[in-house]
Image 1 (cartoon, helix red, strand yellow):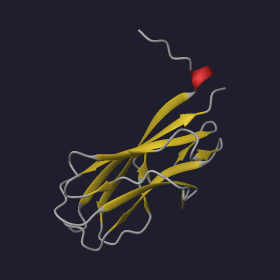
Image 2 (image 1 turned 90 degrees about the vertical axis):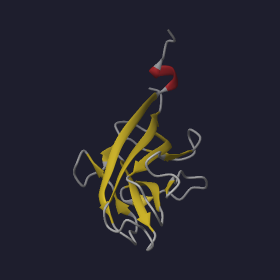
Image 3 (image 1 turned 45 degrees about the vertical axis):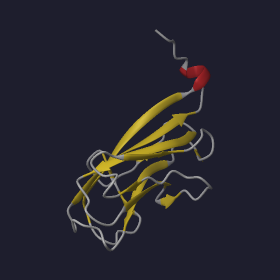
Image 4 (image 1 turned 90 degrees about the horizontal axis):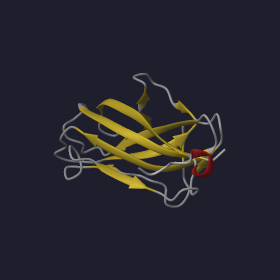
Length: 139
């Protein structure tokens, strides 16, 4: 079995988020963490490395997910922004970025936001689950 040295390489954390009843025309709507409208507080400095997501069946339109810190979406080049659509819904989708490209500090509040098209169907009933993958800097 392989050894994982978190002090040398850092620790990876998967943080789950949800959005219940996504509506058409969502604009940077924060997903819930822990079942409430809250964000994850980073226990140490690190970087965003990816987002995966799935949802109920979509017949039209899209839902784009973006990571954020303190409610402001990351805007660095290459930020992960998976898109849920009729071809990537129940089977899911993901997007990743290289370690160190999008960084955060200890104590930053991290989350995922959703934006949807006005053509989203089904209307106002799509539930989304998403996971934010982060890597903490080695100590």
